[in-house]
Image (cartoon, rainbow, N blue to C red; front, side, top):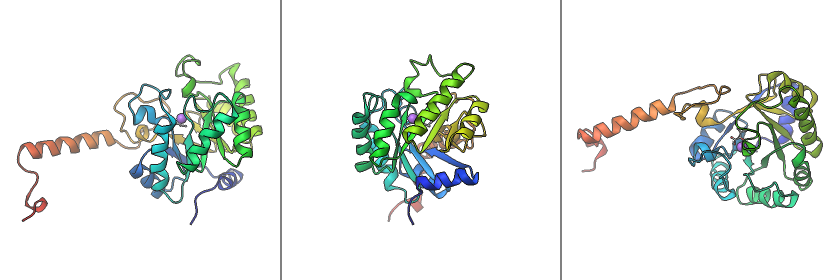
Length: 265
Ligand code: KIV
Ligand code: NA
């Protein structure tokens, strides 16, 4: 058995079959999501927020994501593993993007990389693609530029729609194999999906995208704080883990754990 390949995603679009992507950062999450049949796992720089405790993705380093990418690739056999290129590791030019992507693939074992931006990163996408590195693009709301975009807000409304469409076409022309659309009006995302031949992966972009992605600790309810409107909570892992930790602590305080069955003669 081999991993999901980018042409499988192309075929899914041609057949009108939708698929789901999740983030993964460690061995258990990666193995569970693969077992669940998730074809593509993203080692996202959302790890900055949901793993490393930063306030944004801006602080995330290549070394941070390399450690997680290695864990995720070691723990899976079937899923296509995409590694994010963190802020500051690709913007200065195609050569910088290439050097970072090579680390993610050679050291990390990723099969593809993702970077943020539309037309402005087309030269980066082109060099990577020509070098045999599959690239996933990411347009609309791009968290690494949240300071420039004026905070966490929907992109591509009104006059922004034209820019979004232009960026979508630019990344496709440059050779991206798929594009994430983040926080884009559902109607515009549907139009982009129709116009592009590569799959669109929505997050806060409505149901007409070819695929969807969510940040796993958000969808699994591990996050105790506010989650964006586009997140559907499929579990309450925080509640469950809180209950387990409290019960364990109570058992230890009460002398109930460990019992004879957990002890050696
Ligand atoms: O880092 C991340 O998790 C992402 C997805 C939300 C697309 O970029
Ligand atoms: Na990201």
